[in-house]
Length: 533
Ligand code: KIV
Ligand code: ZN
View (tube, rainbow, N blue to C red):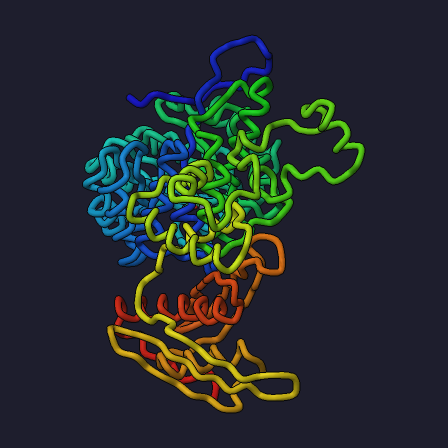
């Protein structure tokens, strides 16, 4: 019988042991579902390792039947990542559940997560099933999952809009069938905190076998209430929170892991709960996910935004100098912000770099350190001062995406009132391809993108193009993020360089390489022809 983490929140500051709330991270499944956030296998593995180091209890690695990529990701994470429970999602049907188990079978601690919608609107319009059929399928799904593994989670999708009586009936049946966790999703972000509190309280009061399972909460952020709703559920006794790094996810996203965790930690006096999260890894993990997905974290985002601990007003600065706690409820270093920003220059050595990388949350292998050190030296020749953000960017840009095409060189001739000419050289599979274009595009970036399309034979629509400086000063590195639309799918690319046109070319190539890798996996998808004449 599973240990239930459910229980009432304690609202006193008496030193009782805090109730442990489980953190179920779904960055790699629900988070990855947000448009343009897809990650390749190496990136998913890296995020999964970072989540394990962060101390999450459960990692949802993907939805194995959804694609070969999802299947492989769950399978590789299950083999490689030790510590957390590894979970795979499945609908309540045999094929999904069998495939999920195939992906999970090597995990030290596997969990199958089955779901089926229960709200009237989903029953009537999406599933065309009556209540009896929903209960039968939910029970059959849970039973099949239990036949593979004892750790089974059941989610009545759109639970927050499901009639309370029916929700109680389905939850009771799922637990009877063997579900060890029952997750209550607010699939469309419709709930409010009081509503969510009532849903959990109702389940705890009316489902007779509720203590045989952990109650979990899964909130979407359509009304900006995902964190508040998750906390309300915890207050009502939920024992697991489903969340994502930086709150990424479908539409407006999911409950943000860093916010919900720090709310419980800073306000432990009120909630009487805590988690196993290593808070000092929050910022590095947030940066990693942001770099990999290209989803920038807004500057004023709670906990991990760049301004989260910046004090601008004179009165605040004065108060801070006298006593930090006047205007700070947690210390930046508690959540992983490095204490100083200006760090190194061209005379700094390898050991100092390794030290700084460790302080920033990266344990580099000797090979990684060597590569980063070489790039660090090259960068230090170009700019006098190297900032933490430069180092983070060097480390995270070591990940080379999917391989494929590489920029060898480019030459651009352009100026006011002239259409650019470009000479571009790329390498691919040991071969070099050169393209010359005269009067190309409406500016140098357009011209270089056009030349890359011509050289690679892959064309795409550029949906988004963002440049920002990684650190400060005129010599700062420029980071470019692009999002391309190709074969009906979004692909992102990013690159960094002190030459922002070179960064643009490499970011575009990074996205082109992802398209190329996808086409290799699904050969049916054919090039759609050049976007430019
Ligand atoms: O939002 C949702 O309902 C989900 C379920 C699959 C848990 O993501
Ligand atoms: Zn969801």
